[in-house]
Image (cartoon, rainbow, N blue to C red; front, side):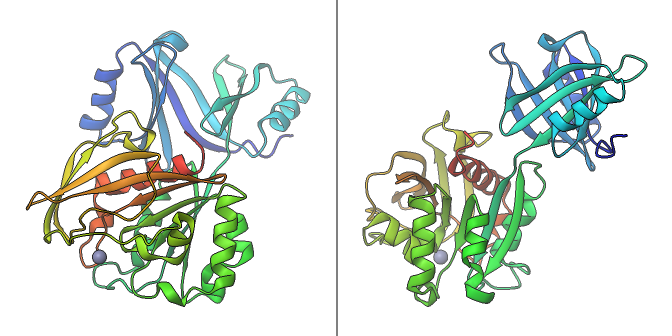
Length: 339
Ligand code: ZN
């Protein structure tokens, strides 16, 4: 008897009017869209909506007639599960395939002919690190805790937090070897990170392709400066106050679901930012005196992808803003080579 097919994680329905159906489930019922996948037909998409611990998936009508489509079970190994089910005489209707975005799925049927799915997702293992000098009244669980809390909502991430006060700064060989992505926030303790730890991080990025997302004052962190090979300072100090962030590359994966927005209270940085030429300038900031800064930029160093994200002065709860969190989520996927 197959014992691993036990956890329903998703119910899927087909609609011939995605817009209207999404509006119904989000605006009338209050479900929250958490992920979108392009369909074959341009403009169509598969949409995951969070409904408590379960996902409701909206499927465009390219996949079949309107109505119920399938119930999905989370398993560790779709091939093994389907083989076991076949052994029980269960009718299997599609062997497991790679559906993209780290997803592997196969289909079978119940005795009523209802379609059932085995689903497995290779997670993006994400280590969110902080030096924990951020004020605890703004971030009771640290900036790392705030980012982790958000990322944990998505099935694609396996999230751990670490901080400077942990053994080996929370950046042991084991911790870094586990991570596909390292998200980093530091400000006043950059130089407490020793050479052994620094070299371990740089090697993981350059040689192994671990993604790296330094945030805000982490432009002066040892790993970022070493990976850039430049001083990483900035020019004039822009005035504190509103920071208008514009999406320079709307088609870049890091811009997915992101629109121009303003952070009302922020610290300002001004150009020139002393970094090598970025591979992409995804976001740009403008302050009230007209000073600008390249505030969301990508680099490729060896096998690794890096996204530097400027916002996040620690005395303001910036990591709790929806657009900011969405950018960090998208960046984590991008540096993990998921886009
Ligand atoms: Zn700051």
